[in-house]
Length: 228
Image 1: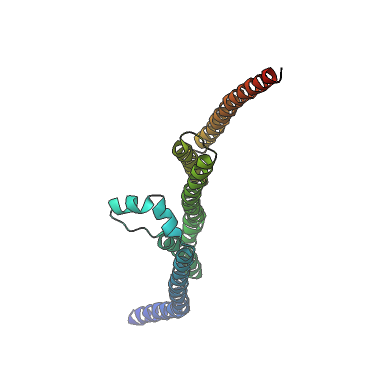
Image 2 (image 1 turned 120 degrees about the vertical axis):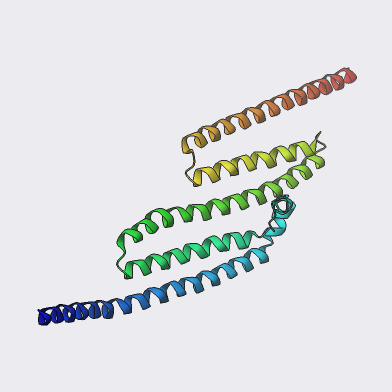
């Protein structure tokens, strides 16, 4: 009886030892993959922050009033830091998935690769669309106001704000569409916005053209009367 127990313990110990010996290299490789993910992700985050700083993205966003909004919420504006953090986590999750695959954890690997990794790139793109839309809206507002003043239009500031907020609305719809949030509703709102803006521009140019034509006819009639 003691001999059988001794054989069973010896067999179990041998099996456990062989499994540990097989698993140890995998654990080491998985650990190294996670460390590499942290390092590469950190490098990319720093690089993105420097690129955003060189381009002056934060300054442009500050002009749009985003810095004050972030300050009121208790944060400091750092678009490069935010995007860099998203990219860092994306890279880290990629390496984490590889580490899980090395360990043979297929179910957890499937969850991270299909759910988390499948959606995070959309968040990154949506963030870039958001910041890009704010910058474009701010630049367009300045261009419209300057052009309207040069052309002696009435209420140039109103035209500039209208152009700015129209772009911001389209930006918001694009962000929601990118994140797959209420896709059907976003498409309907987008179509409605395009129709409303087209109608408003058509009416504006139509009424403006009507007034211009009336002034031209009046001037031509006056000149004709003088010639007679």
